Length: 196
Image (cartoon, rainbow, N blue to C red; front, side, top):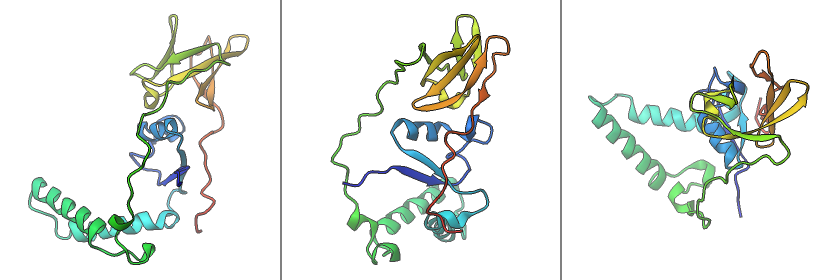
C-alpha cells in the first residue's frame, strides 16, 4: 500500500505564508495534522519540482494563450483542460498512459485528524481565531495559521514556557514580554531527492 509521507512544494501561497511563523500556511498546518511532512524546494530552484512546474507550463499554454473573454468562459477552459489532461492525454512519466487509467480511490475512509492532546505538557491550549495563546489574562501571539489548533504549553524555567505543536517545538515565551521566541525551524525539510 502506498502512503504519502511528504508533499514537495514551492515557497509560495497557498503552500507557504511569508509572514507566518516558520512560513507555515493554514494548508501546510492541515497537512501536518494529517501526518504529511512538508518538503519545500529552495527558493528560485523550480527544477527541484520539475514535473509540477511542467504541468503548470502546459496548463498556461493550453488555457491562457489566448485567455477567454470572461471568467465563466475561462473556467470552462480550465475544466476542459482537467478532463483532457486526466482522461485523454498520454503522459511520458507514466508509460504513455493517462492518469485516469492508474487512479484508484483510497480504500480508507477519510476521518480527519484526531484531537491533539499534550499529556507531557502543563496544559493544552486552543489557539484563538486571531492566532493567540490565552492563559488567564495573558495573550501571547503565535500565528493565525494555527487558529483552532491545540498546542501544548509547558513551563521549562522560572517564568519561561515552551509551546509545542504535535511533536514540533515552536518557541518559548516569558511572562514579561509575552512574545514567542521561535526555536530553530523544526519544519526545515531538506529536498534530498532534488536535482541541483
